[in-house]
Length: 282
Image (tube, rainbow, N blue to C red; front, side):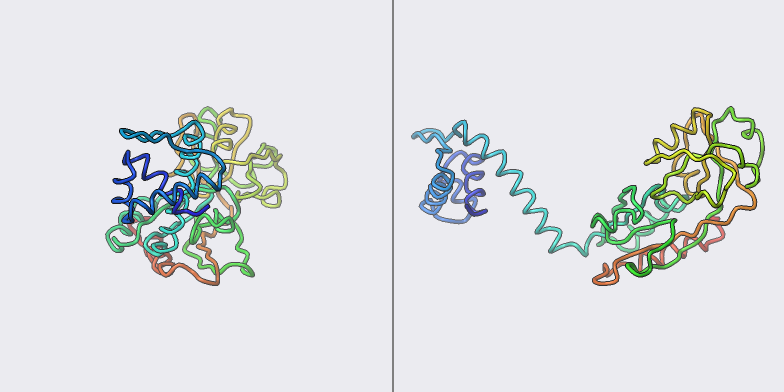
């Protein structure tokens, strides 16, 4: 079985005849007939009912046709990725993308690099999807594994406390880090920036995703500590954010594969650094 056999089957059904399928594929009608016969022989089943007026799939043909469309679509996507990969830049992130800079980053990228499509991908792992092959570079707020990835620090973020809107702290302007002792903190052990050593007197409750994190906080039984980016990317009814005093800032970094980086990697880093340093955006 070859891909051309599957393309032939799809073309025959879509055009309704062997003649039109040959025209669409740019081959002879005899080549269309041979390709279909080869496919039927390889599967040991008849795929089409042929009459002088119509061509219709058999029961087996319907099943094979459906699978053929999926296979061909995947192959076309593979070819597109391989041949035009540098015309699209995929940036991964675990939770909050560029935070308050996200919209402006997307607008400026489109204006400066109209030939390179920017795609943001959220994947809740320590590398924001980079290790999984889902993106070309990723924005992370956890320690960088410098032995595996090249990286660049683009900025820092203050930490905030997320709490239910009816929490007693919600009436305050800020919260001190030491006050978290005795409270229950909900944290994401894979991608979160809060550790047990930062608040040794707090009780920890674990979650695996931003939506679950927010849902737990909304109940009022716990609070969360998070970078400023979360406060802009995830506004929710029933949840408020207050600055956390005396807490170390969160370092924000781009990471990418050392070998074969995307050609637009340094442009992506430079643009975010510019936004982070712009006084009007702080």
